[in-house]
Structure formats: C-alpha cells, structure tokens
Length: 120
Image (cartoon, rainbow, N blue to C red):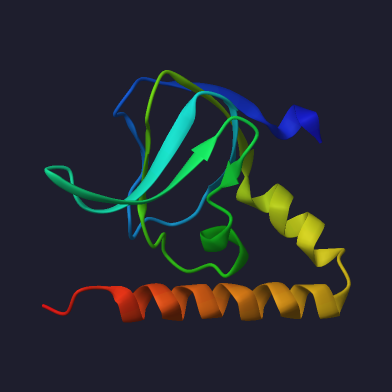
C-alpha cells in the first residue's frame, strides 16, 4: 500500500484543498503542520490543526460529500497523499457495523458543523 502514497511539499500558507471540493486524497502529515479553517483568506477561522503523524481529509472521501473546510500548510510541510480509491477499498473490506458507525459519526460531525455556521 505504501506505493500508493505520493510525497508532496507545501509552503507556509499554501492551500491544500478548499471547502466545496471533491475529496480526491486522504493526507498524512509527514513533517510540518496543517491548519483546517473556514471563511476566506483574509478572515480565516481556524477550526483545527493537524501536526506530524496526523491524518486529515477523510470525511469527504468516506461519505462522498464536498469538503466542509479549507486546509493549508501552517509551515513548511511534507504530506503523504493517498488516493481516495485506496481508502474506499479498505473500507469496503471492513466489518459492516464499523462502516455504519463511521457513517453515523461523519453525519453527526457534518450536522454539528452546519449548525454552528453563522447564518447569513
């Protein structure tokens, strides 16, 4: 499975993905850190940070919904990118109860995030 990963370098502030995009990769932070944020470039609201050894970008792959936040490098960052198809293959081999639990958790997270968004 290691052969399916691609190393990718990001400079501080460089966008990795944007809210609304299709999830094409799961990311592992090999070195550096990534901020997860909402809003626009001028008025970022950071909702999380992923440091070395952490994973991110899985939700949009697992439930095939658009990305719900932006991600950008907080420092010089090296990521390992896993294609969505590899994660989906692993999930397809998992116990159906575990898959259902994952889906419930993702739905709850998306609902919670939507409820906390400012109303325009």
